[in-house]
Length: 370
Image (cartoon, rainbow, N blue to C red; front, side, top):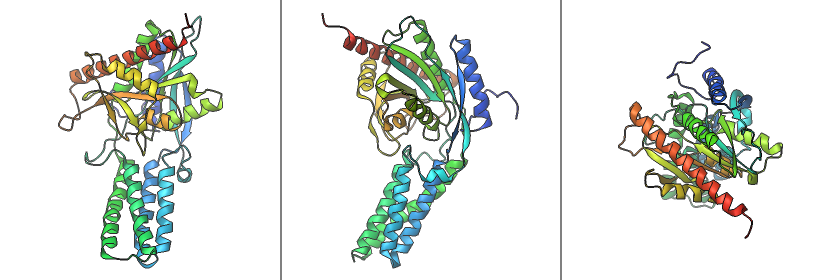
């Protein structure tokens, strides 16, 4: 492969293109006057393969429980357990998949005469997401998969209790067919092609440059372009885990994750997660809500199991929030360059406003009583 990237060459997770891009991103950070380092990490990004295995196990459970309900129930429970556990930092079944190398690009906060107590981590994925083959496929594939497996387990439990009626057979047949389709969807997701979209990475660099020129009083600003973002923010999760081992505490940081922002309108996430959408950090949500009230932004809040970097970090106990853009169903999914630039600029403005609101709130809580 060439040592240089084409401007529109996609950056799949754990690929040579992602590695070359990491060098480019580090160069851009150094060109802005920041220090930058590249950290190689080894990950197991094949979450889709684990989910496909769990789906297949549940289909087997559905077949087995017709003649042996107890055995089918046991297989379904095990499949549901491993499906849900794979969405956590434990991911036991993922340990059977192969490791791949990825890169995190890290820029520490610039030195100041008096370093603030709270570190703001501006982050975005350094890779590009695969494009879904069908827009009707739910965004929370793991939650849908686990729900279908749970229905198989419920039907097997009813059969084990002696309730073997037509209604149970019909109820069991529907999730079985859905799981067969899910196997194909997950395997297709593993082979799906990514499309180059630099909007989130460029937005992070723009927000960082603005904050460097006018530093917030209560926040020191670090930048993390994390590898394998499309693999459930694996690079971000690995970096946070390593920093936790080195003594970094959730009370000392705030994470602002930027999602792609080339199409639609600016948004911020109130709730997010891989399986269940839980509330993101309340203090950051207050700052985002205050920034949203700026009439010039036109930003709105959204919620869903979108598995943004913020949702993954929040699931591991870190204070985080995500911003980006979201298109309406009738909007084109690929914007014209001038439109993409306008959307990105709006998200940058939202990010800056959010940080300033957070800085003001931190200042008000640290001021001594008069």
